[in-house]
Length: 304
Image 1 (tube, helix red, strand yellow):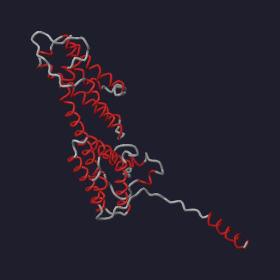
Image 2 (cartoon, one colour):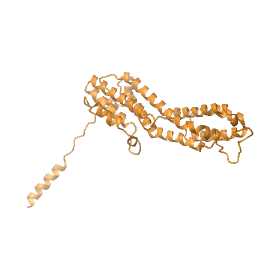
Image 3 (cartoon, rainbow, N blue to C red):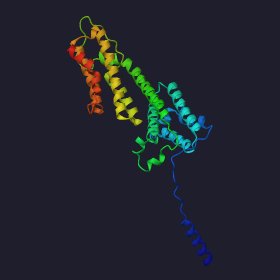
Image 4 (cartoon, one colour):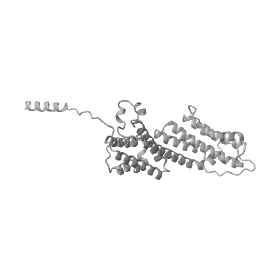
């Protein structure tokens, strides 16, 4: 019995020494001809809000997968395959962002993925300007056979369109809040802003805090998708300019608001928005974000 058991033990020990060979990952996904519709459904049209938010959602992952499919077609030296693939991807993104244009979460998700795909197509284009900036290891992921620079302007236009869609959605949400929340709302306790000839303001339940909350929502949304700080500042700046223009235009047309006490209230309401901008670090490095409120700020000071 002992010789047999010793023989078995020796065989097990020899098996335990087997090592798996180190695999080489090329960073490509095989997407065969005819699979475009499946790819578009899985990565684009069938995505829901719950799929793109929350913990574990890696920003830009969808774009990286798309680029890995493009790399495979480039690796196979299949020009027609690349054209079909990129056309299907761009058309799919255009379709879903138009159908769900009112969903700011979905729109922001596609903004970051379009920006990421544009970055991948640029950084790994193989062009000397970008190729020289890559590490030796990263150069292995560059395109080898085709120049896809003609697709970059299409993606850039896509990013711009999605960005403007998000801005429009945010403006439409803010629009009904601005007049009752910042011009009519008396946020300083004990200050009576009514005067002879003035009309009674209807209380619509809005205040400056609600406006700040919507700004905070969009800031968090953009940050959750790792949008560049420069784009975030531009976005918030555009919303502030929209607030500025809406308030100023209505103030000019409203005699009942042209009173010194109302000027103090408006200035106080504006200060809450300005404080929020500073607390979020959006007005650092002379970014000029708060200059978007300069006209309504000056008007409120003139009333005082």
